[in-house]
Length: 425
Image (tube, rainbow, N blue to C red; front, side, top):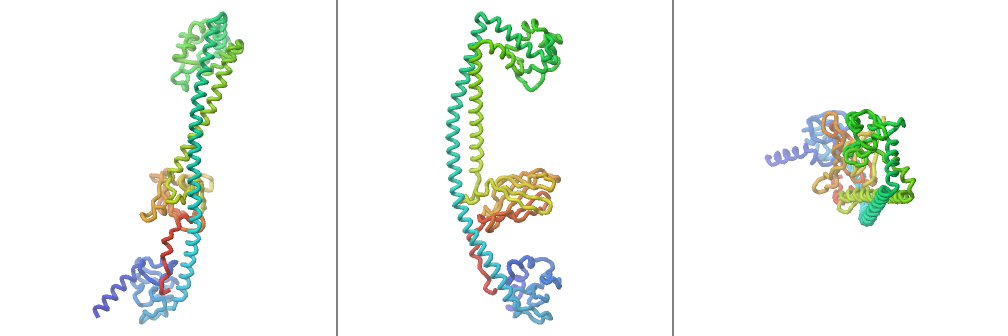
């Protein structure tokens, strides 16, 4: 007798544990989560949860006694428990068979994506090597153009010095003084004022800052204006020396002189040509290096043991939930956009955060835009097996913390096929 009582007690304990209750279809497990009360599935009655699987049928539909679906283990019950074994088994078999078909198809698609991922990985590696070779070639070309520009600038400087040293030196200097004075005399009234200096002259060590009035007055020799004669003997030397101040745009001052001498004109044209070529090569070199940097960052991401997740890079998936549109760009970011078009970052790619057995089952996106209650927005993306790649659901269980269900064939795991159908169904 005691032995039978012991068995009954153990059976009751097992029955109230929703994780061990048998005879439940996968789609009905949510009704048997252990809590204080149990609602009959047909909605007819609420009973204490301890009466679930107590070998007494309380619900008209027999849903409180799922272990024996033909009611053969129930006793002394006023309710007539229906024999639902066949229907339950048929539904469960159909459900499990559907899951198996989805898994089989998903695994086939996953294998294709793995093969594509391996090829894409090799292409990216080859692209990186090509870009690195281009960068090396541009580096050589860049050094050559820098040398050529330096030589062109030196020849122009030598031509200027030769003109200054020859018979035309004084005329050249006078023309340069006159040209520079005229470039500073904006209103062409024959004098340079404080306002004109502030507009045209900049400090060598701080080009972005305008001269103060005191600094401009000091350059004008303590006065508020200066004619060309005083300019030639004072401010001209300060500007041409280039130790403290300079004219913001000096091209106009030399243009007239350059046009007068063919040798200087040729030297100036060569210097400008080399400067243009150097700038083009520098821009190309910078662009290639940016591409190399971006490609290295992409290749540094963990795309799975067989690069199966590589195809998700540069892809984005959208889902509209009420008034918001959510966009998941794997390995990049997650955003939320309202009907007014305002977009909010919910997080940037952080890491894989799955279980030790399957670390690729969950993604974490961190450091989104600040939340009004403090902290930053973040999103956790759970990957589930499916025959299509799509964002399936988005929830916000706590403020500014989002969870998403992302379905894709590459999340399918062969181990799932080990699950079978309960023999009693």
